[in-house]
Amino acid sequence: MLFSPERVLIFNDPISRSDALRQLAATLEAQGLVKASFADGVLAREEIYPTGIFMETHSIAIPHTEFEHVNQTSFAIGINHSGIEFQRTDEPDEAVKPEIIVMMAIDPTCEKVAIIQSLFALLADKAQVDYLCELAPEDIAKEFTNAVITR
Image (cartoon, rainbow, N blue to C red; front, top):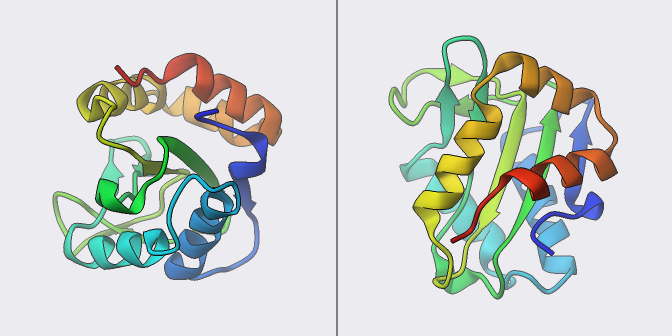
Protein backbone atom coordinates (compact mmCIF):
# COMPACT_ATOMS: atom_id res chain seq x y z
CA MET A 1 0.00 0.00 0.00
CA LEU A 2 1.55 3.29 -1.12
CA PHE A 3 -0.26 5.43 1.46
CA SER A 4 -1.57 4.38 4.84
CA PRO A 5 -3.22 6.24 7.74
CA GLU A 6 -0.50 4.82 10.02
CA ARG A 7 2.03 6.79 7.98
CA VAL A 8 0.21 10.13 8.25
CA LEU A 9 1.55 12.22 11.12
CA ILE A 10 0.08 15.51 12.26
CA PHE A 11 2.65 17.82 13.81
CA ASN A 12 0.86 20.22 16.16
CA ASP A 13 3.62 20.82 18.70
CA PRO A 14 7.03 22.38 18.05
CA ILE A 15 9.50 19.84 16.67
CA SER A 16 12.77 20.08 14.78
CA ARG A 17 12.92 19.23 11.11
CA SER A 18 15.27 16.31 11.78
CA ASP A 19 12.97 14.87 14.48
CA ALA A 20 9.95 15.20 12.19
CA LEU A 21 11.83 13.48 9.37
CA ARG A 22 12.96 10.70 11.70
CA GLN A 23 9.38 10.18 12.90
CA LEU A 24 8.08 10.00 9.32
CA ALA A 25 10.86 7.58 8.35
CA ALA A 26 10.12 5.44 11.41
CA THR A 27 6.56 4.87 10.16
CA LEU A 28 7.97 3.47 6.93
CA GLU A 29 10.59 1.37 8.69
CA ALA A 30 8.02 -0.05 11.15
CA GLN A 31 6.18 -1.58 8.19
CA GLY A 32 9.37 -2.93 6.59
CA LEU A 33 9.09 -0.57 3.62
CA VAL A 34 12.55 0.96 4.07
CA LYS A 35 15.87 -0.12 5.50
CA ALA A 36 17.25 1.07 8.85
CA SER A 37 19.58 3.39 6.88
CA PHE A 38 16.66 5.31 5.31
CA ALA A 39 16.26 8.06 7.93
CA ASP A 40 19.98 8.87 7.94
CA GLY A 41 19.93 8.88 4.14
CA VAL A 42 17.03 11.35 4.08
CA LEU A 43 18.71 13.64 6.63
CA ALA A 44 22.07 13.56 4.80
CA ARG A 45 20.41 14.31 1.46
CA GLU A 46 18.33 17.12 2.98
CA GLU A 47 21.54 18.89 4.06
CA ILE A 48 22.96 18.85 0.52
CA TYR A 49 19.74 19.02 -1.54
CA PRO A 50 16.98 20.69 0.50
CA THR A 51 13.42 19.79 -0.39
CA GLY A 52 11.28 22.77 0.62
CA ILE A 53 9.30 24.00 -2.37
CA PHE A 54 7.81 27.50 -2.47
CA MET A 55 4.69 27.57 -4.63
CA GLU A 56 3.77 31.29 -4.53
CA THR A 57 0.74 30.86 -2.22
CA HIS A 58 1.99 28.01 -0.03
CA SER A 59 4.84 25.56 0.41
CA ILE A 60 5.38 21.82 0.43
CA ALA A 61 8.39 19.60 1.09
CA ILE A 62 9.23 16.29 -0.56
CA PRO A 63 12.11 14.71 1.38
CA HIS A 64 13.58 11.48 0.02
CA THR A 65 16.83 9.61 -0.49
CA GLU A 66 18.41 7.09 -2.85
CA PHE A 67 16.63 3.86 -3.67
CA GLU A 68 19.25 1.62 -2.04
CA HIS A 69 17.62 2.54 1.30
CA VAL A 70 14.16 1.47 0.07
CA ASN A 71 12.55 -1.98 0.17
CA GLN A 72 9.24 -1.02 -1.44
CA THR A 73 7.82 2.19 -2.87
CA SER A 74 5.75 3.96 -0.24
CA PHE A 75 5.10 7.35 1.29
CA ALA A 76 4.70 9.01 4.67
CA ILE A 77 2.79 12.28 5.04
CA GLY A 78 3.35 15.00 7.60
CA ILE A 79 0.79 17.73 8.20
CA ASN A 80 2.83 20.66 9.47
CA HIS A 81 0.73 22.71 11.91
CA SER A 82 3.83 23.35 14.04
CA GLY A 83 5.77 25.50 11.59
CA ILE A 84 8.69 23.16 10.84
CA GLU A 85 11.09 24.94 8.50
CA PHE A 86 12.72 23.47 5.40
CA GLN A 87 15.37 25.11 3.27
CA ARG A 88 14.16 25.84 -0.24
CA THR A 89 15.21 23.66 -3.15
CA ASP A 90 15.74 26.64 -5.44
CA GLU A 91 17.05 29.12 -2.82
CA PRO A 92 18.83 27.07 -0.10
CA ASP A 93 19.55 30.18 1.98
CA GLU A 94 15.81 30.78 2.36
CA ALA A 95 13.41 28.72 4.46
CA VAL A 96 9.75 27.82 4.01
CA LYS A 97 7.21 26.27 6.36
CA PRO A 98 5.53 23.64 4.21
CA GLU A 99 1.93 22.83 5.06
CA ILE A 100 2.42 19.26 3.85
CA ILE A 101 5.56 17.10 3.95
CA VAL A 102 5.51 14.13 1.59
CA MET A 103 8.32 11.70 2.40
CA MET A 104 9.00 9.53 -0.65
CA ALA A 105 10.54 6.09 -0.49
CA ILE A 106 10.92 5.19 -4.15
CA ASP A 107 12.31 1.91 -5.45
CA PRO A 108 13.84 1.67 -8.93
CA THR A 109 10.71 0.08 -10.48
CA CYS A 110 8.69 3.30 -10.17
CA GLU A 111 8.69 6.31 -12.42
CA LYS A 112 9.90 9.16 -10.22
CA VAL A 113 8.85 11.83 -12.73
CA ALA A 114 5.26 10.52 -12.83
CA ILE A 115 5.14 10.49 -9.03
CA ILE A 116 6.41 14.06 -8.72
CA GLN A 117 4.09 15.32 -11.46
CA SER A 118 1.07 13.74 -9.78
CA LEU A 119 2.13 15.13 -6.38
CA PHE A 120 2.42 18.61 -7.87
CA ALA A 121 -0.98 18.25 -9.52
CA LEU A 122 -2.49 17.35 -6.13
CA LEU A 123 -0.62 19.97 -4.11
CA ALA A 124 -0.43 22.94 -6.51
CA ASP A 125 -3.63 24.59 -5.31
CA LYS A 126 -3.59 26.24 -1.87
CA ALA A 127 -7.30 25.54 -1.29
CA GLN A 128 -6.68 21.82 -1.92
CA VAL A 129 -3.68 21.83 0.45
CA ASP A 130 -5.74 23.61 3.12
CA TYR A 131 -8.50 21.02 2.65
CA LEU A 132 -6.06 18.11 2.95
CA CYS A 133 -4.55 19.59 6.12
CA GLU A 134 -7.94 19.43 7.86
CA LEU A 135 -8.74 15.80 7.03
CA ALA A 136 -8.33 12.77 9.26
CA PRO A 137 -5.32 10.53 8.48
CA GLU A 138 -7.56 7.91 6.84
CA ASP A 139 -8.97 10.48 4.43
CA ILE A 140 -5.56 12.00 3.72
CA ALA A 141 -4.23 8.55 2.79
CA LYS A 142 -7.25 8.02 0.49
CA GLU A 143 -6.82 11.38 -1.26
CA PHE A 144 -3.14 10.70 -1.94
CA THR A 145 -3.83 7.11 -3.02
CA ASN A 146 -6.36 8.35 -5.58
CA ALA A 147 -4.05 11.08 -6.92
CA VAL A 148 -0.52 9.70 -7.05
CA ILE A 149 0.67 7.80 -10.11
CA THR A 150 3.78 5.60 -9.85
CA ARG A 151 4.19 4.51 -13.49
